[in-house]
Amino acid sequence: MTVVTLTSVRTKSNRMWASASFVGVLIIIGMPLWWKTTEVYRVSLPYEKISSFKPLSHFVTTELKVLANDDATASKIVSEIQKAFAESDIIKIKIEKTVMSERQQHILRSVVDMEKAVEELASTLDLDQENIFHVVQKKSLSHNIWVGNERIMFFDDEKASETIVKALDGWIYQTSVLRGSRSDTPDQARSTRFPPESAYHITLSIVHPRPDTMKVVWNAAEAVEDYIGSFVDELSSLHNFTLKSQWLHLLDFDFQAREVKEVSEWGRHFAVRQDRLSLLLTRLEERAATHVSELSTINLALYIVPCDKAPIIIYDNEGRKNPLSIQAFMSPKWGGVVIASPPAEQCSQQVREFEPSVGQIMGAFVSHLRELLGITKKDAIEGAHLEPSRSVSPRRWEVDALLRIRTLEQVTSAERTLQSLAQLLEEISNIVINDEVGASIAAAVSELEAGAGEGAGADAARAGRAHAHAQRAFTHPGLLALLYFPDDQKYAIYIPLFLPIMFPVVLSLRILLLWFMGKPVHKEKTD
Image 1: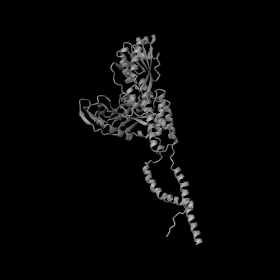
Image 2: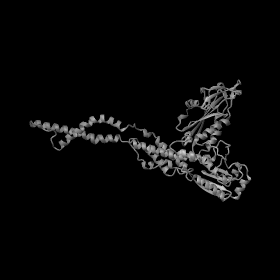
Image 3: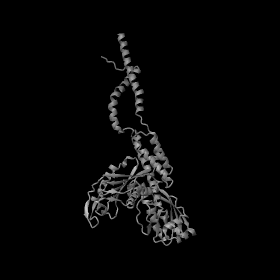
């Protein structure tokens, strides 16, 4: 009996120590190892600073200099401008008034031609400074005010104050566009222009469906350099541009045009509805391969119409004919297309050769670029004369306006991006936040705190960097390092996996505790 009892005790002791070892390995080694291997690396982020951002509170600052023949006129103009913009929460104007010198007044009295007067006056004023606009009195104007390409506006007398305010609000400062650039809901201008980026590709594609039936004479590279290059050079302070050109042959498209008889050299034209033209963009994207770059591509396409389908005239959705000599259309955030039909004389010859008008076509493309990059059309203002631009380059005050728009847009976009990302990272606690993402977020917050949204000019660089850092963090592939599931789905996986293992372990803990305390593990049965 003694031997059997000792053997039973030893067997029970071995069984208890085996259970204790299993529990010890599971708790001391298994649990920490599982915790460490499933740990998600997350860099600490400035959540409080990000949540304190207020995108709708930002505004831009600018300077305005008023020059008049006498102090009374200058004071009257300044007073009206201050009154008009006093309650504006989108732009703050620092106004400086000056009585012109005798030399300046002599220049304006003696020089009749407006452009010449600007050139002469530029020797006494600094018109090269960004974000500074001049309102100058010049008697005997044919309109209340005159605006040209430089950062200067001429006005007749103090009676023109109302027109001055309207021109400053609608043309020079474009407060409605500024307000749309920071709002939650994009306006028409923001829906049309490309989102702000540090660089863009501009690709001109010449589409020639029937190269075997007609020769097209067109120097694409030269046209791009002369027209597009001259235009974007003035915007180099905002974006970098890469210019490309290519030929696309044998890309025919069925416009489903309707033949319309008319009295002309052709005797007919083919009517194409505008809503049909969007399908042409799909065909162009298939062949142009402009989507292979990470940068956004502004597409410009010249479609050469074959003789048997010429001429093509675009009709709007209400059935109205395009009255312009150039048939073109623009697609927001994509680009512009010009449809060039050869003349009937060329198509009637045995050897067909077509040379499209470079000036007309490239002028249409530059007009598309202006809107796609954010330079809006200017509505007519009664009593105000806007001098037509004599070059493809944007007006200098238009570049300043675009700089302010992009600054405000980039700042508000950066803050909204950071707030969306911070909300996502707080809601999903197991998203990996690596060092690169953390550094990008910290850099964006630092640039925003440094006052990137308090003006244009020098602050535009900070706004661009803040926007770039925020976008880089938001689109970083490291955020998708793991697959993310709701917690209830995790529990649905863990419970069937661990419950069968943990249930006997938990029960054995009670038995082990009783055994270590020297208490009977099982109650003895009594008869």
